[in-house]
Length: 226
Image (cartoon, rainbow, N blue to C red):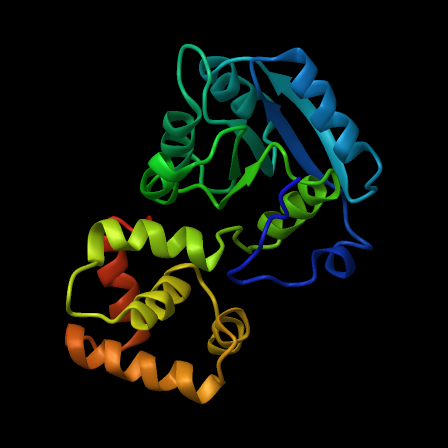
């Protein structure tokens, strides 16, 4: 089964929540067997509690208002209203709820829209069981679940072209995914100084001199939600 790479602002959720209330989760999937499986994956973690379930997009929005979960695990392919649409609505109406989108399929065709939807990450249903609880705790603590490769693929759809080298696009994708210089360096297996050099080159080529400006650029290009 595939290992999920986590990136972005990633505090240590386990220690941070050791003395706090468990994270309330709403599971959204149209298959009862999948919902039971996700419950089982989360059941062994004392820092996570399943507050409820929903079987379609409309029920998911209703349950979100009723139960006020902190995190929602939502299948992309749902009846009535798909998971991407649910994430987009929640991003506009209730940003306190963090969304992690799920799919059994490769998300290549959805990568850009997943990021644009305001979801905090994507996890494959084939991921190891422990990754689901880890994902819940990570996004509840303010982190994201987009790998550099995931963000780069989305970025290339809106900000590719000859202006940036492949490595510069990787670094910009890391910035868009919320990674620090140290995290980007670790994932690209280069030095922090090299990342800083690429970041400076990106600023010059795009004529953007601040991190806030780079973030704004990503938002304007549809890479990130405001």
